[in-house]
Image (cartoon, rainbow, N blue to C red; front, side, top):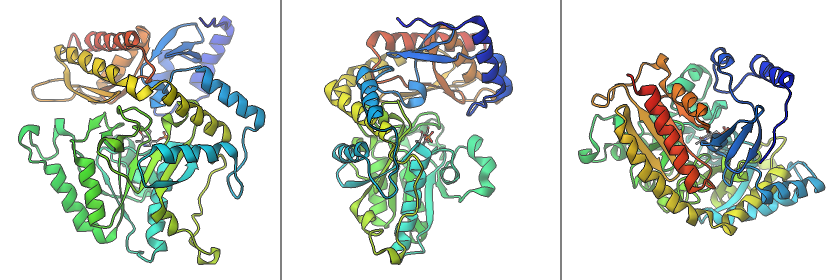
Length: 458
Ligand SMILES: Cc1ncc(COP(=O)(O)O)c(C=O)c1O
């Protein structure tokens, strides 16, 4: 077991700088200052270790990125081997070996028809690339009127301005309304709080119809629809009804609209299949991959597309059809080497096959949560789980925003040696695919006890 050695003075200094110099993402620093949050210095399997030697089960895969656990020798060694060759060289105008090998692998494992790979560094930039390519595709083929995007309420596609424009979470996105290219928005199928006020048992799939009506109405000006397939993750793990993605693919074909599937969160096994699109057997026009692509080791993203899209850009330079987009670290060799090693592990360890009983185990364990009176809804797609806490289960009334119930639950879990995250009052369980059965039980027990502790007296 890893021994951690920091002196008291080092610990004091690290904590001071962490709270007074660092500005943490998605964090109100005024609250963070008071929380004595762990500072991670090492990882081991599915555990994180902080500078005071405390161990925490990584219950959110270090923000949905980790796949095989931490300090996996095969990935460590692949990065070290690559480091001995070169850490980085550009893809602008020249190539590098790992990015070529990875592009070939990605094409082999993603849905048939995706044949081109464009790299970037994170999910948001991967989404930007899909949006810009979709837009330029129509320009390049002389259909300049198709320039709008359709996206869903509750959607999350990242924090850069293009991605915010197709986002639909008011708390994160509303304030930037005046400075983004806004999209046409259609309600998402948040069945627990159905936007049409219906019950799942007799709703007649109002969401399917609303989608069709909106696409039909705007077809002439629509460049693309963007969706998080199977599950809207950052919205609070909202699972789409079965058949919705297939329906969307059909409508996109019918009305000549491109389909962007943002698999940043769902890709690489999270939903129980390698990619969420595979649940409904569809091929999008663009698939955006990031997070788990490197096994959670290094920042890397890939936007995959079809030959049809590619051909619209493939022209003499003077025709000005080039895709003028690229980042300094596009196709970084270390990231690509990590990704190749991670994909090998998927095969060698039969990760997807071995995940299935753990998904069932998680599903069974979650039933126990209904005993807790403030659990309003439990949503699961594979290894992605959201537990929505409510003040009143009968009326579905939410807790007052300022009570920060979800946040209190994650602090309670932390005391018990588990790191989890909240999305408002939705508690997220999203462990590394490598979690053992015993660790999965421990994770569920801790989340259960933490919810009980925080909501018990209410
Ligand atoms: C579906 C989806 N798209 C895009 C992003 C943005 O990815 P990144 O944080 O790497 O920019 C996220 C991040 O959570 C996401 O869940």
